[in-house]
Length: 163
Image (tube, rainbow, N blue to C red; front, side, top):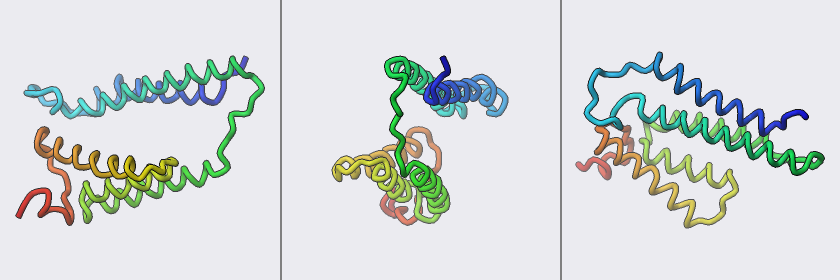
C-alpha cells in the first residue's frame, strides 16, 4: 500500500515543525540569560508556531491515511484553480511585505487578511470584517503594550499612538 499525498504532506509538515523546534531554534535563536516572562523570550512564539505546525502535520497525515483506507479508488477532487490560488497567495504576501512599512502593520494586515479570506472562499462580510479588523488591532496592541515590541504604525500613527 502506497501512502497518499496527504499522508506525505502531513509527515513533511510534522518533520519541518520538529526540525524548527529541535534544530533551528536551539542553534539559531540567541536567548538572553534571564527573561522575566517566558512570552518575551525570542524563541517563545517561533516555538509555539513550530509545535502547532508539527501537530497539524500529524493531523493531516492521520486524516490522509484514514481517508485513503476508506476509499482507495476515489479521486481527491482537485481544484482546477489551485495553481492560480497558490500564486495569488504568494503575490499577496510579497505585496504585504512591501506595504507593511509605508501603510503600517495594522492597515496592511487588514488588507491582506481581507484578500486572503476572500481567496479562501469566505463570503460572509461580517466574518471577513471581524477577522480583518480585530486580529491586526489585537496583535498590534499585544506586541506594543504587553511585549513592548515596536510595530510599524504607518499612516495610522495618530490613531494608534496619539498625536
